[in-house]
Length: 170
Image 1 (cartoon, rainbow, N blue to C red):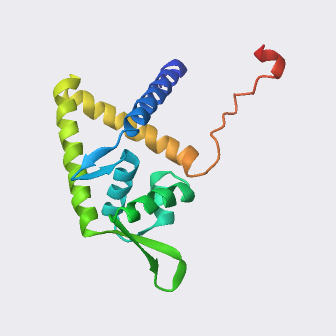
Image 2 (cartoon, rainbow, N blue to C red):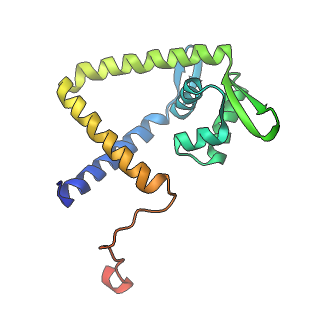
Image 3 (tube, rainbow, N blue to C red):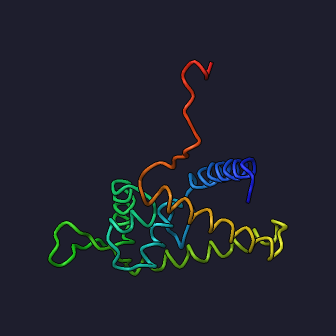
């Protein structure tokens, strides 16, 4: 069983990775002549992988609020990459599909990601076995937190944890 210190170190490493990814996402990339932020490109990818997905389902899949998803989808619609159509018989539910241009941009995004992976593989210095181990571990961490935090909508609690009183934090 891992120690509390190692779990804490892993969580801090994940926070650091989150900050690095956030910084990277602030720069748009050219995907086949279309400038997209990572958030937009990955939303396009999720729609491509599940054509006809509803906005609500997309929100859940991407761990975003419905409002945040709507903002990104609006941008993709304005750029002519996504079509939002009402579901037959349900005026509240929108289904999302890619336009022909959306598919071309999506393919350019996949090519960009593949080129990035090739670059990282060349420069990172990790073996195939190292990466396989990291990926297995990340899958377990993602599954654990998805089940115990994100899906329930409730914060993770620990029976052993008690909040410090205000006087203890001085």
